[in-house]
Image 1 (tube, rainbow, N blue to C red):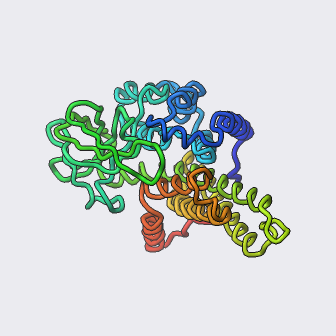
Image 2: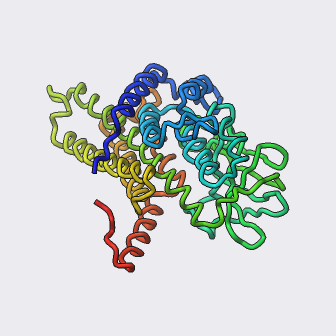
Image 3: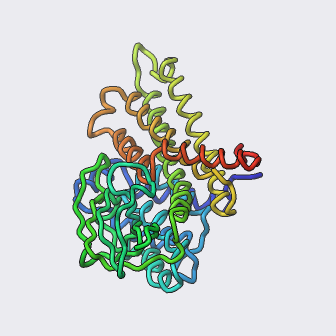
Length: 374
């Protein structure tokens, strides 16, 4: 089975890499954070014009219909450059929720606006510390309105629409579409990552409409599993960039008359990171196949676990390889560390996804089926 991207997608990847490398120079992320703006609006607009925001959206709903293969590739390049835009929240979560569970009318109203960049979407799932779980959902939907508190909601400060997980009168968990307006109050949160617009979202009788295709917690998990594959590609891109940064510095930094890259203690650490990144890339490619084919039970969890571990290890080793300057504001090392930490917890930690994978494999074992993993 060939998990590699097609020639067209590979060419698009190179174009995306050139574009983002030209637009996101050293210091861009820090300057964006210092500006106080939630994201780079000009970059977001350019990405919309190139069809990136609507990559997985059908043309009938204003998208470019490039497919999930292209979206995975774009996610990797966005992770590589630390692009200061709400791509993961709006595209992996908001748009995907509408595509999976929305009515044709809901999709006609919101997907074109998401695809052209005029509206940012996000998912409000968490209600404080803890992993995604039915027991951790207390927000309530009744009589067309939602009440409750959600935090953190990543990119919630920039979002025009929010997909909210809440319970109905029967206690069943569903997904509801909330437009920013009366009854919706956002309080900015300080997070490890620079910039962004993570908020605590207070919902007090906020007008909401159900996404009728989401009828219980398994549907919420279906959304998270599809998003996990896209997050994995973004994490792989970031991990590769952090590794490249560490290797480049190790080659140019001399100690005792030779580059530190020649020292076993350094090169063995970097070799271990290389293995972790390549393993994560392999699992992410398997996940991309699963996104398009609907197969690969366990592929999302495997991709998410490997990518989370690889990015956190690569970002940490990058700082250590740079030594004293790796901890400074002027060095870019901390930017990948901050992004790695944010992505690692946005839709559940590596522990959550390990437990998810264990549950999947245990169920397959009970049924007497092969585990399906390579």
